[in-house]
Image (cartoon, rainbow, N blue to C red; front, side):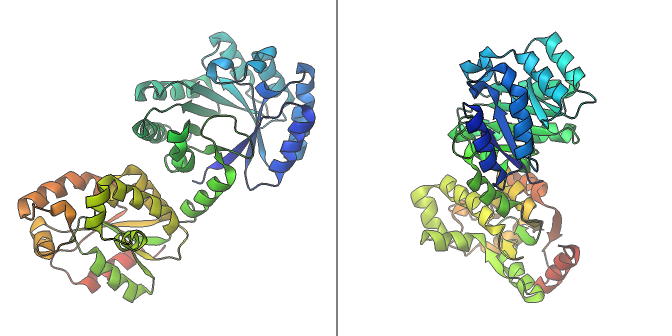
Length: 406
């Protein structure tokens, strides 16, 4: 599902707040968040500003948020009474959502969330950690708490110290969504390291991504235009036939046959990278290392999303990254081609373009490596087709028959 893009309103005065809203009205975004803690005016003005914001942003959803200092908000926000503001927003019923920090005073939090039932304004139960990325168990517990409290949406934001921590948040998002498919989630890692969660969180179950127009309200927010560009590519629709599998299963051969039978263009991801880099895959591995090559694979998937319906033959390691898999599943049908290790060996034994097998060109090593990769391939595949002792035209016919609806 394509996430909604939400941009913040962080102006200081009433006139500048409304001016930002008029700019947002013209943007291809779906939501705006008024951050009350930036506002330099008086509490008595809040209801009137919300009313005017909703009139301007009639076709967009409005979130009203008073972020506390404890969870990364402006010190200025302490001038306003937190729960009084939440109650005002709920009673007024003009905003689409009000943000409630679920780790504040328990009794008051439960009371205001309970009071939201029957109102036109929904509650986003949020938790923010600007210092670190908590454990998987902690993150799941906070999102479950938001659900148990009766919030309409659960939100979790944290700060990663490593790329792996951002990956962990994405994995936790997917786990929470699997457990509670009907409970809307908003999750993100902040800062530069967390940008991937803002761009690709939707593939894991996050339903809103916070970008920015001119000014950001949190570290790592990406300009809305960049987000729109990526979303247009990733969420263009399931249309490609994507071949994955271990080296030597016949991806290139089957790809050519699929092109002949279907008339679809043929794209080989390895060849694309070689053309873009101006050097062979062994040269890339030798000079830059495998991680660099895998990063290039991940980046190029976005561009595939906007190509006309094609047959895409992926390199043997493409399905080893969770993000790659989710991107591929978003843009097409992922077909796993399989073959026995002995078959693979006979097909690749004389190849000089297999850097992973350098010094290990034998059946036992191929079997060992295939077994390590098998769970990744099987998780990625939406279809599985064996290729041992079969003609390419029969394999292609089977794939096209199974993919006839895309």
